[in-house]
Image (cartoon, rainbow, N blue to C red; front, side, top):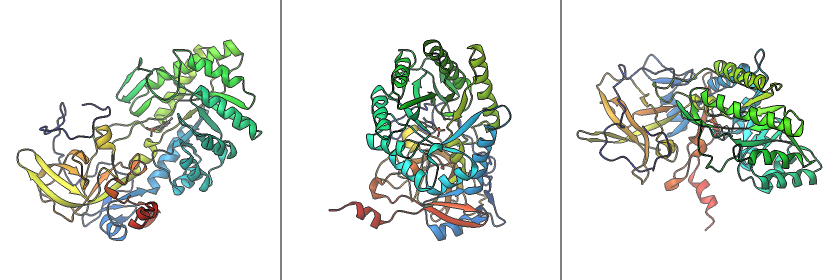
Length: 466
Ligand SMILES: *Cc1c(COP(=O)(O)O)cnc(C)c1O
């Protein structure tokens, strides 16, 4: 099945994706711990709970649709990444990729758990600073940062600015000079490796907007230009190869090529750059089919790859940075929906409509992403029914879960939940059809707290000034 971007339109006439055999799970009431956050369970009445609170009470208090984020799980995953990359013999930093999901509470938790933070816009930078993340623990990315964004970042003392073009090198140098600072930078390179899920392409096209190519010599030229500016301090090289990656083979090729550039820089300029950043993209389980690796295993494997490549090039091993976004926040939240219209299509499937849709989860329409779903307001002994969970938008591509099984006695008013929606759902939410973006509610130890409130019609009308 294609994992690449797919036109948002529905597939007509197919019952299941080609090459994909979907069997009903043996127990529709079971909650696979791979896809649900750590504190999710069913209580004695069969109602799903998170952080000790049941979803019926949560829906009553906060409404639906809503994202419920398991704070203990978030902190545990952040800590696991931090600990894995600061363990014995590993010199590394973990930057949480804020684009996956960012709010002030998230920034505070990251700060408390010892992580650093990646931002890729002035808006994300503003949230990071508003919540007290120290500038030196922030990195700024982007292929087209505005002069204003660069100025704000330099002013905030951002620890790394990842430069992405020749123009930006000159622009940033001028800004740093005018502020009287020497700005630390990394150069983003394209290594010609592209990774998605289980495969990677070692000779990927460099036909993309990010980075400076290693092959064509653009990266080496960017190094020369950066070194020529007294107001820029070149700290290292950055590469990011893809998303939802399950093994480190692609990183191995990327690391080899990045280290190759470090060796060239040493030979040409007589300096050994002290840092490399291998980006993010580590995968999570969206369905029971996915088997992500633990942070400790990834850390050991990346550190070993870098050590080996540096030894081969006769270089000191640089400090390593990684930038997991999805792998930290993705599994920590689920979206809670109320079931509305149920439409059985004979010989095909049953369409189950919920009170949200592509405005709160665009990934299915955009990337053909797969998700799981469960009935969470009760258990059921009914037969499994093949369903497609769809939203309420005026668009037939408005699909939340393309293929799944729910109990055949599902009824309007039931609550269903889609797990693993912590990353790239609220952060990519839209106001399509003037939908009101759902709240994010953090749940921990029997208490629930809104960290991003639900939009209101007033919010919409405030922007529309007539
Ligand atoms: C998107 C992105 C990340 C995070 O990707 P995940 O798949 O969420 O881990 C990290 N670094 C860069 C440069 C990115 O563009």
